[in-house]
Amino acid sequence: MFNMSSRLVALAISAAIASTPIAVSQAHEVWVTNMTSANVTVYSTDNYKLIATIPTGAGAHNVTLTRDGRVALVANVGDGTVSIIDTDAKRVVATVPSGAKPHGISVSPDGSRALASSVGEGQITYIDVAAGEAIYSEIIGKKAMMSVFSTDGKRAFIVEPTNSTIIEFDLAKRAVIRTLSGGIGTMAFIPSPDWKQAWMTVPKEDRIVLLDIDTGKALGSIAVEGEPHGLVFSPDGSRGYVVQRGLDQVAVVDTVSRQVIQSEYVGERPDMLAISPDGKRLYVTIRDGDKMLVLSTADFSTIAEVKTGDQPHGIAYRQ
Image 1: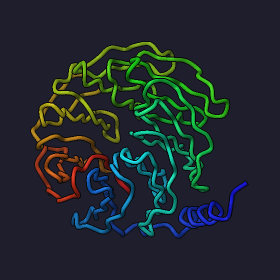
Image 2 (image 1 turned 90 degrees about the vertical axis):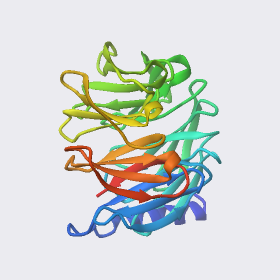
Image 3 (image 1 turned 180 degrees about the vertical axis):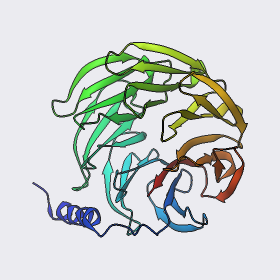
Image 4 (image 1 turned 60 degrees about the vertical axis):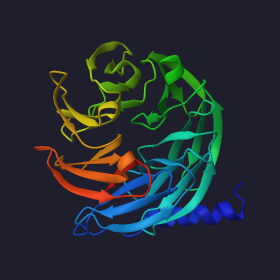
């Protein structure tokens, strides 16, 4: 049973989810986590002005939004917690312990559950978002880099980079379903928009590895120099945009030919990316420059250069 504080957290988050939808005419937002500043900064997509600064935990690393945009979750790698944020009120409503060095946070399709991945001790923490509490924690290996929920929300695919594997995990039974081959030091596991393939960035091998999600068989790889890191797809799935962190570049990959068709310099130590719903704008965190770049996907011209907090890393687009 929940204690009184848990009930209050649940009511606060439920109220956020049930609140009146944002008007269509209102600008969208970009959320950026800042590791050294230990906060999230929020910007309007109309003019890229700062809307809010939200204190989180130490080492705010990655941010993920529920599909409806009402709740944001931040993995705080510095203090072993996840911050749950009411995105309308722009405030933290719950803080959940989640193991040493939580690196990534994923959210179920219906927004009711989240999964934190801890690289410090190979732990995953399964979270009830509305209650603001951990349901359970489980050790699955030496490290847990990040995860992705299945489309039905019943399973998760968890990156275990030390063993070069992807673990498919039954969340209700708390059991491993199967183990898929990854790459050495796999960083990201991103399903294609149709969920037929998974694209994995493997920075230690300078390549993207492709997997058939149903069969678990390798479909080949794409050479991407310079430590491929963050990755997003265009809304139509025709392009992949990947950070080449070692070269301070972003590469464009044609998903049909599986070839890098363009690479552009963006600044010192780019990390993660987000893309606008229309596919026309690319948002990139530049960690060593303490800034976010807004790029045109048409010609890679710079639309805006936005000051962030110290050492920006994660980024998400909120409609």
